Image 1 (tube, rainbow, N blue to C red):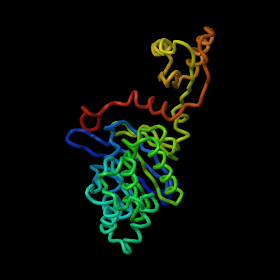
Image 2 (cartoon, rainbow, N blue to C red; image 1 turned 30 degrees about the horizontal axis):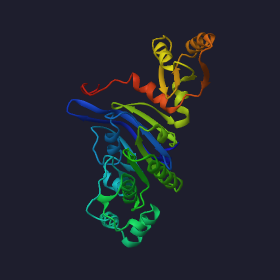
Image 3 (tube, rainbow, N blue to C red; image 1 turned 45 degrees about the vertical axis):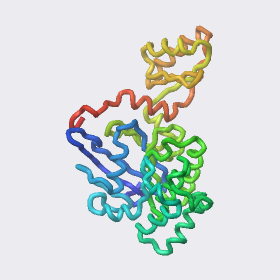
Image 4 (cartoon, rainbow, N blue to C red; image 1 turned 180 degrees about the vertical axis):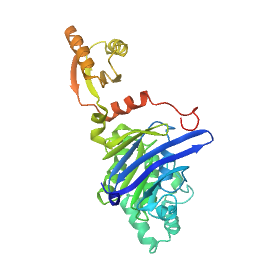
Length: 314
């Protein structure tokens, strides 16, 4: 893709706090109109990277653009065109839903504020609760209000930092329905998450671990890019088999999903031999399957070094 087709294009982004390199020479390109998932464990530098990309934090190294604006010199213009939803509810709990949205509209110096507030209330299904104090809302409704506040100024880019943490599954599903609607209208969405059912909703994915990008690309292509081969195992005494397989050379990882084991790795021949020997026992059912994003995530995280106690450059 050309530079003009990118909503975000950054190279070498670096951020150091004290002696710790929190983000280490990070490169990323986000196509316009895409839903781009940003995955990684807690403390991996996702939030810091997002803040640098949208002009809220000055990097110690690197360069790039967001919505065509330079992240180093045009941060104000970026902020005018980005909606940023933080992990925690950051609106005023002693104001009503309408008052919160009106306050945000004032901050963006919007004309016809009432019209825009009414539209935001309608779009997110908040009209019937417009007079309710924000502090009395459940997690799911606070989430809707936060999204309405992010979108009221019609941003071209929406940055969501673990937006569904602490909300129930139905609220998460409803939230993602709205995100897909926004993306279909042309809004670019960058979302950090470690929920795999959310990751599969994304068009593209980048994995970050302790400040370093491990891999990025189309979500459907990630397991194949790593070269993962996966098997599904069912049968009796699955816990005993799990312990045995974990001690077997040639297997990358073993994970239990209820009464089922997923066994995967990058050495296809070694796995085939192990499976052939297991099948001879006629105890368990083995079936080859396409490796998924969760398996890719676990595989990448296993060998990723934690930089918490590592100095700059670690």
